Length: 216
Image (tube, rainbow, N blue to C red; front, side, top):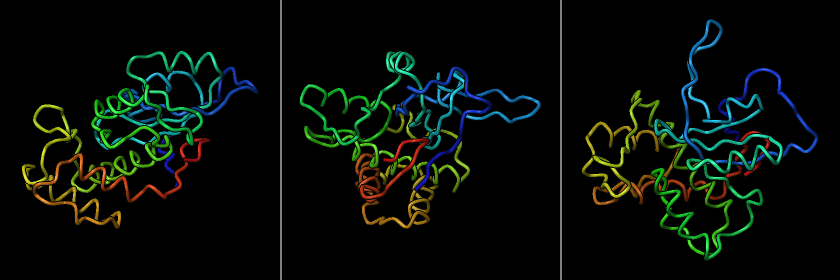
């Protein structure tokens, strides 16, 4: 499954033979409209580098998973931003004891289920599960023309139950899941968004994704 939503525009600058594709979880930014292209959401920082990239948005949430091919110094610079989470290049490596709380907190802070992650969980599984949630939110955004983030951290959090959401939100979420041919048996009134999104993500655990130059 290809999830290359947008690519960097124009020729690459300062391309080097040592450039390697890397994966980052980071905020989106709005690229201003010009006379030749409309406004669009793009990966923060990466869009300004003049490099090729692929991205998958977390629906209307201001987050995306982006892949880009950059040299080592640029990779270090991107990873140093406090609002950027660099995904290990070896996706088959696993979460160590020292990194567990960091990984869980990084996901949860971006409204992505993370408490399920344990020591020994492969990063590939974490990314695939997260992308499943991203897909459902992308579809949710289109189903009901929902342009406002559903989870704002105050009125709605990952701990919010499905039954306490407004009727339209519940209907659009379930319709989106059905359009994606997902099992919606977990969409019960007492289920939290954390549980529902994790259940959706689990259904993509065996799916091969392609973002930019990275197979996940």
